[in-house]
Length: 441
Length: 172
Image (spheres, rainbow over the protein chains, first blue to last red):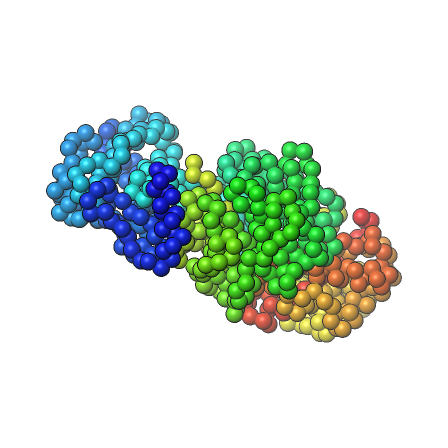
């Protein structure tokens, strides 16, 4: 596993524009994700077998969510069910590989669901059709009926990781700002949802303006900025109990743009005193603070490297917004963005190798990625207003907010591969902005 | 709590009148006086009462505008603020909160900091001209509270603003 990851990483570093899916013709079924995957791997996922009458509906729905996950990743293409020759009627029966070869399904996912009312058990196997062998071992997940989507996402994560060699991202949640009302009277609430927009839950009411929630690395807590007191102040919320409290309530100053350190103990954020905005760090347990920047300019949007040793942030100390990296304890910062335009909202990737950002240039907004030294900048999107990237837990996909132009303009969430492919809108019940992607659960 | 309730009411009133008079700009400040229909005589507390917050808002001018990504005060803005200074010195029972705003052409956190720069520029000017600092405070809304919602410069120009909101009688 480790070796596979290492070699994939090597491919990433070198092959910026080599477009290919490397499908092993002999040997194990494998997609190697390069920067330019163009041909998704064909697979089939028949309805899972219902092993009890109560499970029939769920058995179909679980297979559909698995397919939505895999196809939605852009790396897989489903062979439509109408084309299937064999039916899977029993989880234990031998697979008729010839029938799946005939429709060119290179991978086959079979599964079964049993339910005794509230408790649901999902079993699955992944098959390498052309090799005529099972890929990995059969697994099962058990849970309550209302967690059926999570079990489907777990199956899809297994398929994804067995075929790509990388961890998946489907069983994950996103905390974001749910928006309603026209631009000049917009109400904002914190909400959390599955990565695909399902199971939206609201975490705050609409009374106080709330901005930019950020998950802790374990997904248990959320930092955000709220105007509940009339001033923007950094709050922390426990997702389990939906209890929140102010952690930066110093009189007369604004605090915002918070983010957790990987250790979950330190919070880094911006503090405005007078006309000056600087970056501070706070030990969340003791409340002890430390000023990390002390320039007369705007320093904001800090984000830790995954090892916690460095912070990337934006500053207009040069005259326009640019990206800088400094030690996590503060001190000398080095500028890493040098292209045309303004750079903001940097976010370190979970793999540690890249930084995603928002870029404004010539009246357009872009989401882009660069290496941590600022080299190999690539813009992934372009629109009237794209903003605020957040990384999928495996570092392959970025979610961001796109606001449309004009008086009727509204904000929606989108995902895009770090190759710039597979731009997709995430369906949410209302407008949505400021996504923060949580960990794989 | 009481202060914030009052502020909310005052701001709600402002939002309504600002919307209905959105096109009436004069010297960089909104002149809301003519459109509010108070052509009649003096009514205490109304916009025709020079000691009323409504007069401050509508006749003195409660807001100043800024160039793109700037927080420096134009001569027009200074003239408006000089009027605000006189009013605040005359009406010493009132405090003020200066709200800083940005247009939508920018990222959220930066615009919060930019709005703070603008509001602070106004506050520092008012203090320099003699308004006691303990009667003033500021807050930035960044790009969160536009008053004009189109996506071109005619709207952006009005959204890049600092608005002085008069609040009654509590010294902070």
